[in-house]
Image (cartoon, rainbow over all chains, first blue to last red; front, side):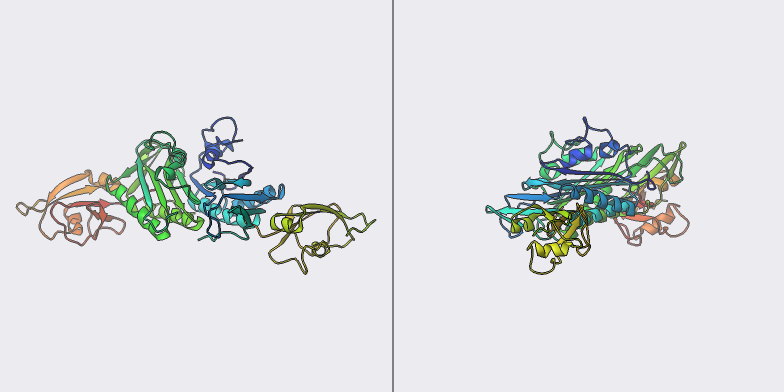
Length: 166
Length: 166
Length: 85
Length: 85
């Protein structure tokens, strides 16, 4: 694996529901023609990585106030959002010396259970893969311009801040 | 999600190559008849979790001594290995209050690039999902009876200990 | 709100709660040389005093200092608290 | 190596490098009451002195104390350093 080479990065915004496992398998929308045998890493020209960490975040069924969530609206800043995701992924990948990073994020109106975010990291060691994935997730929650509005009881409420790491 | 209920656990040993993404999608060997719409969590009767962390480890192409690795042989203690994985997953899941844990581990003779281990955790929050996944991976590396033998240049060498977390 | 003849024109963009409160999402503004994002925040009536600590400024789609004078053609955005992921 | 008439029979299992060094993987052993895994380790000639710190003991497929006497029917295993995952 190529810790010395700059990491391969893929950043994707999805205006429609996306299937995180299909993206990882290299068969997702825009993932090219058919499944790549090496999945998303193979699609980047990487051999099967020794270590791969993924995180998938999905829309909850309840709003912050406790009511039933009808939908989650995700606003972004076209252009800056993609750029920031790229900058954050690049910095995090370099800091941990990982081989590849995939970030996919939903925009627009999403329903409970739908995927919101996917972060995948391929590396030669499990520590860097896991740490890079965790840090990049926190970074994009605070440093990439996305805004959530929860729709509950027909009323939309902007979410100011993130759910705690827990 | 059910932080108070005991976590749902799945532990699998695979004597043949397995596809981690197929297991996650609920379409893997023994994963039941066809894809479950909710993937491995849906197969357990869980709604789509708000947070899901995965780790996949694969066989490297080089032996510890630097030579080309021809194969990795994985010996285990039938009965105790499954039991220990269950005990470790249960304890880790309870400690972090997660909803479900899937552990799959390869046994027998594996080739470079093939999946060795998959750990997946579903939870209501990203922190517990990530921490439980990371800790369970370390725990099974040290507390579940598996023994690796690297085959390189026609010579088999038992691996005494794990690769560093890095 | 515009200062004729300075030739300093910037594009201002608002997002999410800020956009809704102001009732607009983008405006082309002509303004005096040396104007900063902070100055424009007051000038546009987006808030009474300084830019609140929770609001961030982006210039040309990168986070920027609210006290740095704007240049002709800049795209200035005021960003309410981010909640991604 | 067996003590006739005690009725205390245990199954001993070896794995990986220990199995290869000893040349066997499982044996049924009859032994004196009060015998511990540590005692059996010497008795079977698996090592000169005490069980090395790197070798772990399992009794009935759970990690166990090497100084705890064995019971009839126990399955005892000596486990070389684990390397899973």
